[in-house]
Picture 1 (tube, helix red, strand yellow):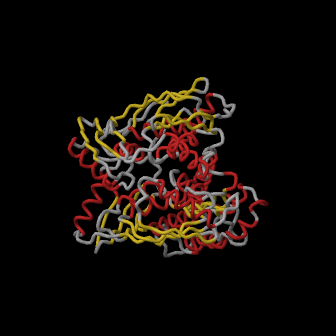
Picture 2 (cartoon, rainbow, N blue to C red; picture 1 turned 60 degrees about the vertical axis):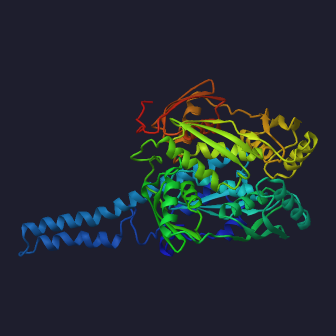
Picture 3 (cartoon, rainbow, N blue to C red; picture 1 turned 180 degrees about the vertical axis):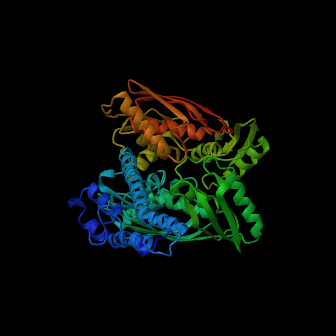
Length: 553
């Protein structure tokens, strides 16, 4: 996280701000933290030092009347005088410009949070200084807190996120009840059921102890536990078994390969150093989200720690993240990269997967023992550079088999205890181990959340998601909706509104242009829906090697 000297930062009384949240508007908080008042006695109305102006005003007559001064000296004095006079003005103008940009960024963050139904944006305050964003306020579950930080990290210009949101559960839960629910969640998940760990809960704070095989398994255990209502925090006491029989160079090369083959990362400005299994990542990236992903991918076999403090997020460069010098990898390279990604994903267990690649078309065949592994394998494949399409023919085979009634009951139980999902209008049916979801939820995010949770239930082979989301469409004109979509695209570090043409007619958006991956294509469509489009015609063309030409709007 970038550090600032005390002299370069505006003092922020966070406790007082939290205490008086109900008495302050966001506009007041915004003004307080991006502005810096100057003493009227030290500056004139234009922000120039008054004493300096007075001295410079007296300087020219004294010098120009001197009998020994040369013409060259006079020119030098004039130039220096101009520099002294104009430099404070230019510096002030640049500071004002950066403050305006930061103000726009804060509004973009608040807009992104407000458009996400899973985040209680009304209870969250956003302040920022030089791109370092602090989130304040409170939410009723830990997943909402983390989701707010994750969404903030996807906004262009954010250099770091300090998450000081408090978790205050809306319902009272006893520690014993929370402990039982966490244990149940870990046992229900096909990937974490065999983890060697213990659970202890004190005042809503969960402590996990024991041993896991990898850093990835630890993160998955945390994520599963956080999906239980009533949790305020997770205490990490898990030990990771580390393989130490690898050379530092082998570790470094594997990390570089993983970064190179991830579709969301531009590794051209990233440097990796490894010493005794300790990894240091340095260089520059274009978003907090990309930085987090790089740190996560750096945890390979043989690594004992990853230090990302020297990996900076560029503040001034607001161009979209784009790979430079891109070349289309061979089918064999793509195949090996997918195998590598699957091997590190703890959600894929007891799997016998065959990967076939032909000109970027990937076919997955074989056997997995749970639906989560099947969907995860496809997700990891799409995140691999060079993949043009994915055909998922994986079969889900379980031992033992679960009855339809048992599966339905456990899906409902998972829905009941999830802190993000509003489940009261969801109907669950199971036929031949195939889950069918019907009913109405509040948003696209709720619909996706329900499908994700159902796919994690042991025994399920497929999820047929027929949920509808009841959206109260905002009364927007087509030009207003078009601008909202363009704003969403512009603030994404992964996209550029210059490479995507947006047309809107009767609330239906049409996207045309070029992107470098199918993941970017899907992201652009999601941004259009988030902006308020009733429907989206996605006609974006995917060309990994394209330079993304500028389109006339």
